[in-house]
Image (tube, rainbow, N blue to C red; front, top):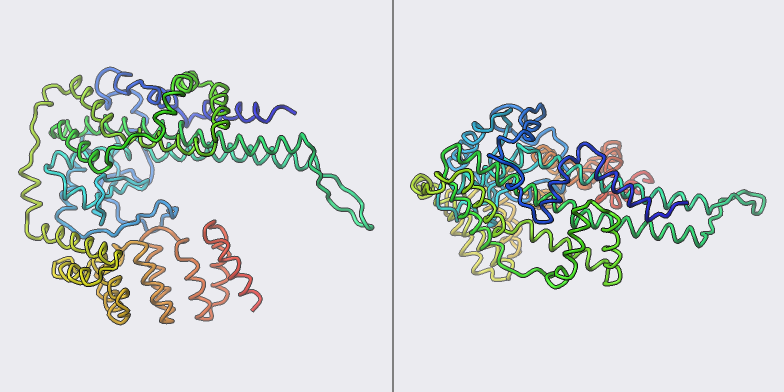
Length: 528
């Protein structure tokens, strides 16, 4: 039998190089080893022939206009938004119009997008697989111009246009294939060392692991960890770095064509740098020792060379260092300073006349300073401070701050009422807490955590019909059926809908996180 080591490395090479959906690996690796993306082509990025494949599309996002909802989609729990949506129609429409103007310069199939403001003090917006761009309140409280907003939105729109989420799915599929291969090796060795024997008149399968079998199984498990760990640490994260560069360049093309000032990008990255904080890599010393050999291995797509480097990782504490390498690359690919230098070089090459253009602060400041919009910022600012006071146990201070939040026009938005609910529960005033649940003006804008508090409260009150109604609303709102399936089955059982409860519990077994709980409940229900 061939060495498991060689089998896995060869399979890894085939998976990385033979699949058409992995086109672009070379660029990602070049990016990892120091070659800047904008130095790999002439002219603007948007005009490159390789972008033609993204300009013509026919999928769920094709077409103009805004997305309506996640209803009908099957969204994995880890991709569901975690924050409340902030109701700020004027600000949301303003940003949606910016996205429309950016899209007009794409030169390809329009995609449906939706901009939403979320209750978060983070700075960087993000786009999901389904065309939604989430903009934290922290972004809008810190930017000073429409140009800055446009560049931030253009970056997230570029991720959608370049279908970066699909590429991430390919990398995850590659990891799954490696895992399956390792499991196959393990099972093959188990079969090889299992014999049919007769015992007490019956035939049984008896497993006696040989030394070679044990060695093969051990190596399979080890190299599964190593290859997938390296995929996380280098291949996948190098690709993410490449994706950031691609989005930066396309964003600059779209925004400049729409008349926005390129220098706004530097303002954004400086603020992002402030939010992230400057910190030295935990692997700086280690990386100095390894960088030359590792770069050479990756640059040549030499998985054997990579394996030799990883073998040395084992001697120095393999688990710790693979994890630390992941941390190193993730910090590197998000480095605002590095991105700023790259974008500046690209702008000076392609947009030198526009580089002198000043940002337009007037339009954004006029909109931001309107009373109704300042009220939104103020309400959520007080709510955030009140939540911090609750977490530190300072309930008197939390009361003052929460009342300030409820004195604003956003008093009945989910993000405000959750803070009041938490405060009343911390004060052991459950009746007043319940009143805050009733005051929420739009539950479709609530976070999953607040939905869970509502569902749990109704469960405690034995209001099972209300539980089912809110779970149905949550499933439609988030496009996910796994988050509340346990509560759903319990509510159905208490309403004597036993067959439906059993059906829900069987469905629940397909969700890894909830599976153990549902198996116990199913066993109890079937025995009753």
